Length: 396
Ligand code: PMT
Image (cartoon, rainbow, N blue to C red; front, side, top):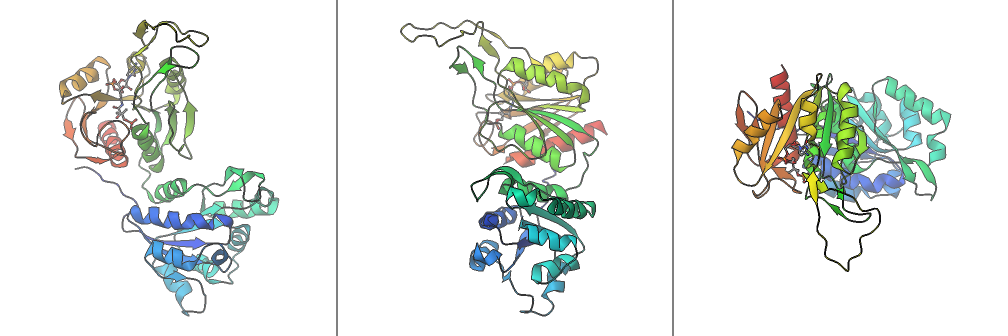
């Protein structure tokens, strides 16, 4: 049975929106949480309504938006009583201070005191305010009581200044909510994931590469992180959003990737090689830019086979490879499983619609020495969870 782990499914979330410029992102946040299967009730402070209208959030959440402590005398008790989880995004310095000191003078702050479940806050403010010791003390006090914090990020702030204070991006807040709700069955694992393509340079400006977007590997990294693993992501060049909370190592060439994988292997319990490592690289790299007046004949040589190299090591982690095949060549995947001494290989036919390169879905067969599990077309997030499930089953 495939474990289609959708941690947000049927969860009742209470989202508090406070008065910061990042409040506009709360509309998108509500949509993404609902896409994940959650129902969302929104509480807005008076200041939040100056940045975004209750109507926008009502439309996004398909739910009544609550703004007034007195509109319904028991709302501050019934709303939290029906929620599984509370998210405050954006969380201003004022809300953080009130929450840390148990002050309750409006609907959101009273709901926070009445709520018995987990709370996640996404701070958003000017960097001078964020780094003020009193704000830091308030945050430390909340974290010591089990509140989860996501962000803020460093960057250009609404006032034009640079520094820490930007509210995290919506995908990071959603990932943090999922992570806070997920079972931590991988808490003892240190998972090393490779993702994306490698670039093999012909000269200073040109390279050979392939169609990998990195989506499959990033999905494995996110799922492992959500399930409590310590995750290192070694990534070729992609345009993907870097998952918050992973140890991120960017690389370009197959040789770079091998070097970084080697460095990380001693501290890893599992290696998942989802990267599309180029099989060939130019025999020599020209230092400048090769002039285009002549034709160009390339002498290509093999790149190092990273999995093969690691499988020869004495102390090797649990090894998971992918087999990118054109056609139903499951036999090739089995050959790779044996030759590279893998514990598990993930077969994908990259010519199949909805599978392989640069799409959000994949259709895979999980093959190990004992069994072969064919999965239907799933999102890459679901495939990632199925791979991690199989790893835990084999390791058990
Ligand atoms: O990134 P996406 O756009 O989401 O696409 C996902 C994917 C198609 C890239 C992914 O699902 C996938 O199949 N990745 C492996 C691609 C690949 O290189 O397959 P392969 O059959 O050529 O290699 C077999 C295994 O050996 C792979 O785990 C590969 O990472 C590894 N390898 C390959 C070459 C090499 N020099 N060193 C290696 O370690």
